Image (cartoon, rainbow, N blue to C red; front, side):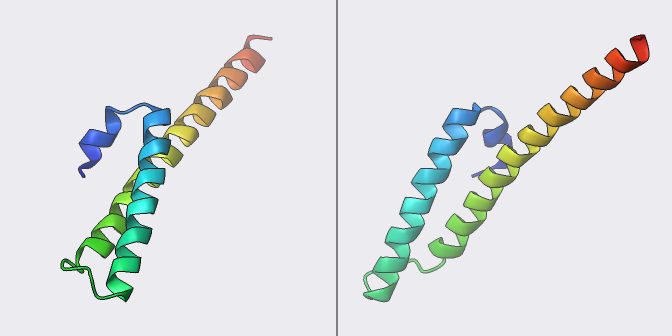
Length: 79
């Protein structure tokens, strides 16, 4: 998963994607424990994908907060 792909998704899609990836990670860990997983490199890949999604969600939260702060400062200066 590329970071560019995440930029195009809405926040609700990102949250759903995070849940889906967490479920897939759990399933991969379970398969690895029972020696049914062929591609063991998929576990760190899924962990990184989850981190990318969480980072994008947090970046959007901080951007929204920064916009609120700027708006509050502009309103305060207008007084």
